[in-house]
Image 1 (cartoon, each protein chain N blue to C red):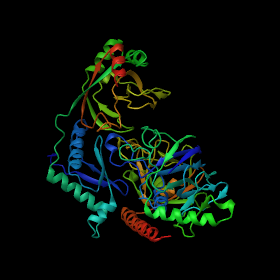
Image 2 (tube, rainbow over the protein chains, first blue to last red):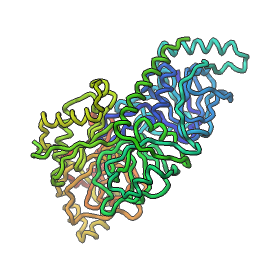
Image 3 (cartoon, chains in turn yellow, brown):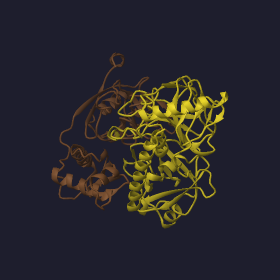
Image 4 (cartoon, rainbow over the protein chains, first blue to last red):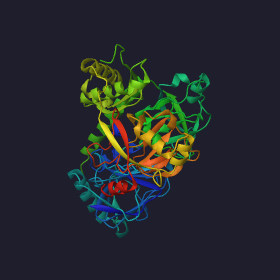
Length: 341
Length: 240
């Protein structure tokens, strides 16, 4: 079970849920920027949520199945095609050996995720198959995908094998032209990604440790103004353009200290940066706010030019939202497992 | 014990917290922080994800779901985590990190390995030999690992050797480069862009994910730079 990369797309990497536990060595947690999309895609092909899949950025790759596969595509809408025919997202899809799965530019959102039954079985590094391009570890040789890379798969679960068989039988009954794929009618709920929407992407955020060192105007502006995602954004950080946030005189850079994904830091120029999955383990800029963990998938789907707004929540709310979100994920996992062909 | 001052805990987002010990002197804080980090690591709680010691803080990343599962009562995961961490520190009485490991880092100074040595020595009004001697006689302490995998923030640079950052950062600084920026000296574990003044290079791998401890150095370690010549450098590089 495997596939081959024919075209790598703009920036595609193997990602799982990252490698927590190595920050003391200066190693980022990393992992998928949109964890909801990756976890969902994995559940839909019978995998554990944390198996490795592919993260495509802005414009997608072209892959060729070298054996029959069960895949699921979640996240940004990149016009996914199988042998030129549009394929559905957010559900399991059987792809016939030899068929080609291709993606265009992201129309809504920024990152699409592909999970394959059995997971992508590249060698793990420090407990994760996720690609950390700075450390040069994980994924395929620690780098983004290139044309010709082979992506082996692990062993699929019985649930996936049953669906692959059933969908294969359905495909065989289609007219000749439709043999390359088949999918069931049910699907998982997509998150409402606000990419490109009129009123922008709303990120819930709680005040950070240095919030009080910013002037009243800056504190009000943070939760009132709209910010635009700058082109120089990547997995390390999403840079924002908009009204600068003035810090009070005498404050500014701090001694380096721990930072985490979602931290909104404000360098001297006053333009905030929201740290992403590959952020450094330590930083020294004042932290005006933190985007809550549950909303990091929305951040992952913000592409250059999109508009971002912050809405203030408390730590209590953030953690309650987090716990209920995880309970929903557990229900989704159970619901998918109950769908037998 | 950590002196009479109670450590203070504050949140860092919704899945991390920061431990501070207020009102201490910065020169020795790293010891206290390394001690706290060690103590929290040693407690081996399954909800603790990561522990990062820095100059005046220890950051603890935790798993709110694990905490909610372990303690299903109404308390917030953060409150639970904060109380547990303070309890660990009170019961285990974190000791300031005692005499740390001493790690020798061989450095080939100047030439192709240290393209900025000549200018740096001139700025410090020293001959290159004296500059090397000074740099290698300093006793350095790793206050934290951060910025990139295995990158040590070292205190202890003789003040006379302090250098401004380069006006235009290099787009490629080779792995192993030893540099100075402001009053800090450090070693680049991986090739990366960088604006430090480069004075030499070490053949040691400061970061290797195949090692049991991927970062050669840890917060609290003492470091000594040992000058080596080009031949020894080539031998050591060949044997890596």
